[in-house]
Structure formats: C-alpha cells, structure tokens
Amino acid sequence: MNAVPLNKNQHALTKDRVVTILGATGSIGQSTVDLVRRSSGKFRVEALTAHSNVGELAKLARELNVKFAAVADEKCYADLKDALAGSGIEAGAGESALVEAALRPANWVMAAMSGAAGLKPAMAAAGRGVVVALANKECLVCAGEVFMRHAAANGATVLPVDSEHNALFQAMGAGRREDLVRVILTASGGPFRSATLAQIENATVEQALKHPNWSMGRKITIDSATMFNKALEIIEAYHLFELRADQIDVLVHPQSIIHGLVEFSDRSVVAQMGAPDMRTPIAHCLAWPERIDGPANRLDLAQIGQLTFEAPDPVRFPALRLVQEALVAGGAVPTILNAANEVAVAAFLDRKIGFGGIPLLVEATMSAMARQGNNKAPASADEALNIDYNARNVAATLAPQLALKAS
Image 1: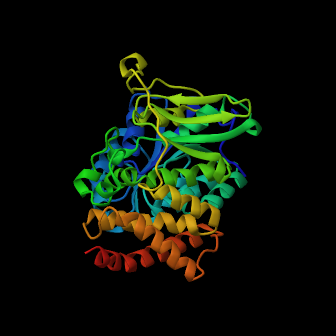
Image 2: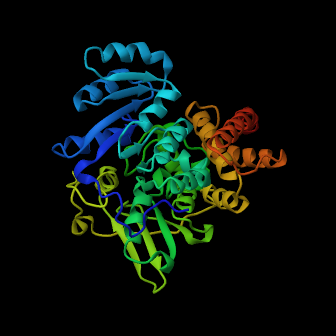
C-alpha cells in the first residue's frame, strides 16, 4: 500500500509541473511560493487556498496568475471575491471550495493546510493520482492507514515535506527497501533539552516558545518543547514508510543539521544533512525526481565544528512513551493522541493548564476513551474526523479538572 515512491522515477514532470498550494499563506505555503518565484517560470500555479487571510491570498493569486483561489472561512467569501474583482480569478469558500481547489488540474499539490480541515482536500488530491507533497500531519496521524491506502489505490505519489521524513526518504534511496533495518528521526530537544523535570513542568508560555533553532508557528513550537512533534512524526513515519514501531528510533541532535538517518542490513547508516531551512525539503519535493537550486545557506561543517547526539529522555518527555503505547494499541489511539494534544497545547497557550499538564491531558484522554471502548480504527476520512472530534470534546472536558488538580 506504500504510496511513497522508494527508488522509483515516476511523475518526472518538472518541466511542465502545474502546482496547487493548499495553505498558501502559512509558513510552508509561503516557502513554496518563494521557491516558485525563484524558478524562472518552471512551474505554473493553478490554485491557492488559505484559511481566512484574504488580503495575502488575493495578493498571491494575482501575482502568480492562478485560476482559482479559496478560503476555508465562508464569512470571507465576499471579501475574497471583491479582492479578486477584475482579475478573472475564480473565488470560493468553505470546505467544498477547498476540495475543489484540490481537484483542479494540477499535477503537483502541496497539502500544507493545518489541522483536520486539511484531510479531505488532501484526500481529494490523492484521489486524482497526482503528486501530493504532504505537510499536513493530520492526514497521517488522524487517518494514516486510510490516507495511504487511498493514495496507493489511485496511483498517487506521496512525497514527505517534513524535514525529518524528507530526510528519511532521501536516505532510503541509498539501498533497497527490503534491506532497511530501521530509521532514526532526529530531534533538536527544543528549549528544554537540558532542563530538569521540575523546570519543564513549570515552564511558562514564553519559555516554551523560544525554540533554539527553528522559526515556526506557536503550536508546532510548543510541540517541539514537549517532543510531541517527534511523537507525531513517529506516527507519520510508521504510515509513510510501512514500518513497525520498533523500526523507528529518535535521537536528540541539538544542532539540527542531520535531519534523519537510515540503517541498512549491512550496518551502513545513511544520513541526510542540511542547514535548518524548510525550503530545502520543499524544493526536493517540488522538483522531484530532479533537483532545483535551493536558497538555503550552504552547509559549512567546518564552521559548525561538531555535531552532538543524545538519547531522548522519556521521563522528562513522556510524549515518546505515549506514542509507543498508541502504536502498540493501534486502532483509533494515534488519532486520539493527536486530537488531545491539540486541545492541550491550546489550553496551555491560553494559560488554562501548565506545561506539565500537556502530556497529562493527552494520557487522560487516551485512558478515558479506552474505557468508553472508542478505540476502533477509522475506515474512512469521515470516521477519522469523527474520532478526532470526540477526542477533542473529551480532552476539553478533562482540561478544567486537570487545571483544578494543579492549583
């Protein structure tokens, strides 16, 4: 069922690649637009979407001369239509418009919408059998088996955009799939890599948002601080590359230069390295199976001087323990873990629970839904979204209790 093309050269379409960007105004979308701008006309953009940033979406749509632009928020439709007046660009709003954007005649789709709202548009793109550059975690952590089976059944090519999974994909090209022994995802360790358990549990919002290496959105920055980002990446790798849970390891690498490693049966370990810049994996996906010039800084190992590594600590970072439990339990548990984490991070950013309460709320939600017998694996995108919805409600109900206990 694996739709990630290991050692294959299908969809060699760079010279006539038509691009759609789902989530064009987010950080991944903006980086993709930057690469398109630098491509000297190599890529044509068919459609763009955004959540509600009408001004930026309309500006990009006009600049890139797209044919269709859509916002998720239906209340923004009139504003978008007005902003595009006279341009000949069609406007749309709501879930159906996002799906329509994914169905437009592009042969390469960047699935960079955040949250569960990105699942159906990404599924629609995969259903057309095109190249889907996947940056939406929910496709795999909410509905990994459903999404990958759907992509494979329709002949779609799924390319991983996340720097770690893209690194694994590149490193896997050094050997045969049947000779792969394990993969290693690297983690920066975030802002609390060397902090004590007490310091982590009592961390403030401001401390948690100070990532040492990457400039990212608030949610993913908090995920890096808890290491739930790595937990979610383990789930993604599990589905993307059809791995067993015991074939996926995590290594703390503070410099964020090595993004992923693959070990083969002869004990060769192949690593992918690069300066921490998301435009590198995006450029790899945009031009695959070819290469284009990338704007990231050239890697200077002599200047860096040394690369260091540490084993992750599941006591200080219980997300790594919880994800292993979720994969062993299987079914809907990975979906529940992701949904509960979303609620927990939002509650922390709103200062309703402490930093140490994030993994506690995730674990409590997993336990509560297990007691309810709600752990059956989703068989469709709608079922996955229903599980996600229910898990969020359970987590939201438990959050005030958790805050009360901590006070």
